[in-house]
Image (cartoon, rainbow, N blue to C red; front, side, top):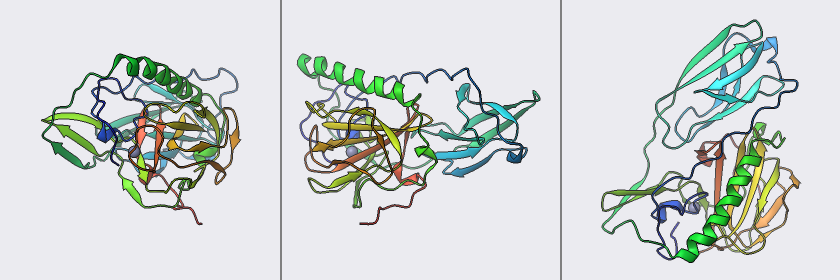
Length: 305
Ligand SMILES: [Zn+2]
């Protein structure tokens, strides 16, 4: 997970290809979740019981599939609505720097509420201190191009909140069967000043390795033309409920925006486009701006060859 060049700057961000290696100052502002449709809101079945149940990692960087109490008609996590599946299941996640608690509130059809105070376990991250300064002004030309790329990524994330897919319910597979070469959450500190953390998982795959959809989804962004400055040929797939996967540095993309992809389907080939010193796959999972550690996602990985 080394990165070529030394461009650093406040606003390099977004998907953050190997962000730990690129000094940067500020996380991007994530788009607000799309409004929930006003039609036919699901109601959790009575079999859901009287309390919440969860499957997954209740920790920083963790993602959980929950089941709402029976009769639930609306769910709120720390003040923000959470969409509910027709069977009463839902998805929540906690970013790398999430605080120690979260409050989940279900409102039931009879007007009663069920409140669960969740304990979000802290984790320790790999921190590397460097004796060099963090900030360097990137060229104006870079910033100009970058603004357009960030707008596309932001639009894809807005889309992620509204596409319909049940991929989020699946047991994920890894997009490639390979050694982990860069951990989620790793961070460099430059003369005491924190750089951004590594927002995904790096997998050491040779150039041209087939990349598979880790779960069902809908293609949100396919940068098949000019590679993005940092992410290169970037592919983003929405898995429903606001969850998306991003695949960076691809040499080739096999799908286009709007395509429905199935778990295990080859969607592209690995490469080293964008900011990367060697071929690898950077796989990032995001839910409403919360960065998720792919190593914590319930999975059957790595994928069988
Ligand atoms: Zn990376």
